[in-house]
Image 1 (spheres, rainbow, N blue to C red):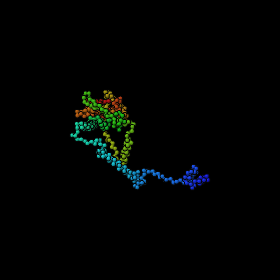
Image 2: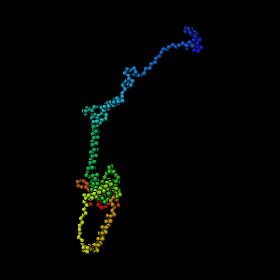
Image 3: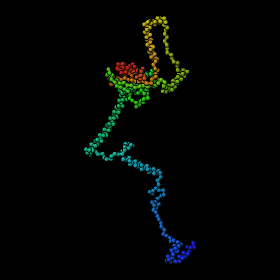
Image 4: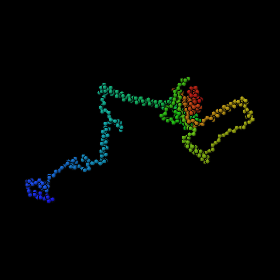
Length: 370
């Protein structure tokens, strides 16, 4: 302790508190500093928090409500059970048609009997029921109309679609187009070969009354398409392979002696005739020479016209026209079926006659000659 503090403290030693109070202020201050402080009463502050440490059932890993902690599987099972319970409660409020729900119920009001209804209620119920009946009748009427339209178009004998199919079958069974178009042949309702079969325009047909006989005619027009002259045929490689296989099999059969040699047609032996007599008999007169020259000239012109005709495949399109006439039974019968290659508007079209009835010369609306 510093020496300057010892004297004031010594002056206060042994004195009573009253005597110390009479000492100077500085001495009393030093005396109070040197005296040990009295023990102050201890103050305990306690903060009460929301905790469950005092709860005897509390577990450190438990939930906020004191329940044991759930595992993931238990939590999922509980959620699934709640979802099933809610779904069952929702399904209980709607009707079902088997396994399919019909939606929520509209009105849960009881359905009153007819005798319990007043005049306004009876009118309202009759109006509602008549509206439902009108909708049912309208749907049934549309179904009947659609059914009749389809059956009339697909199965009626006088339908243009049915007659169009008959014409195609006749062309396929005939060889009239072999000198004009190369197979395979396709048929469309328009001059374009790429026109789709489905979704295309209907068959072009015209109903006409004959100006002289007054009978009803039906003219059908469509188009047939063939392969070009230099275009390869479809599956030509398979046909070539099959031809080579047949040739190889025939050669193998000849070598093995299985296949016989082709039999040559027998030729009739004609006795020789005296040339002198033949020349004498065949020598015509002047009139015969003139007639023969005319006939030979006509034959030569016909042969030249045949040789100048285009080979098959020069054109790839042909216009098909069919003439039908209605008979006494009310059905259309075919009078003529012709194909103009490439079309009837061409300067010199080729005409292939697939069918021509005897009645078509006087009753038909299609001319026999181009």
